[in-house]
Length: 112
Length: 113
Image 1 (cartoon, each protein chain N blue to C red):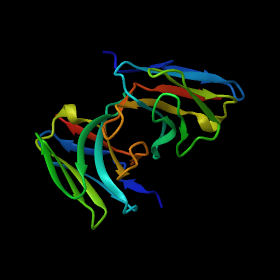
Image 2: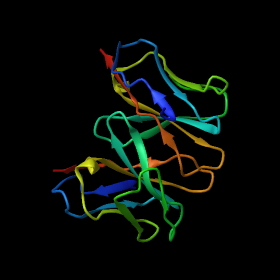
Image 3: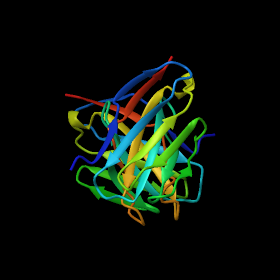
Image 4: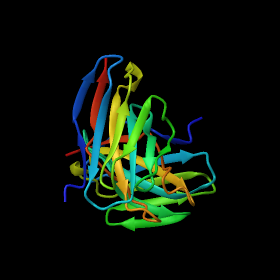
């Protein structure tokens, strides 16, 4: 079993839809949770960062962590064609600053 | 600022050939990383350097060596390339300490035939 699982998609939605992207993980030591966005043939860039459980909102993006279920989500409201990318969840333990575990990514297409 | 730069962008090698992937960052970051990205596997850490003068193995170090040349530069060497090393390689850097964000370069697409 992989440490971090993510539905690879592809996920295709119409412009303006609400998108839900999810990851599950198996290591209860993970404390920090991140979402990276990766455009085609580019390097990933950090989108959201959350510590422990709870919600965090930034504009159209909301990150949610449920540590009891080992489940994290990224919601995108009013999705735009510019949101078309691969979304990677990532996580690490309390002191493992350098060993971040990435999910395989979900490919999202937002159709105008 | 250019951020994190990688050379070359593309490379084709024959099995058994060697090559070095170069990475440089201009953000004065302490920590640098090499990842490989394969379909369905996500990013996997090959080696990292938490600070100038130190290097450590990541999840998939076999077949690779690294050199932290100075604070700016971190190179990845394939001594004898194998088809299993066909991948996209990303370099990243991080400020260090409890700063969490990693900044990634544009990647090197490597094919080993």
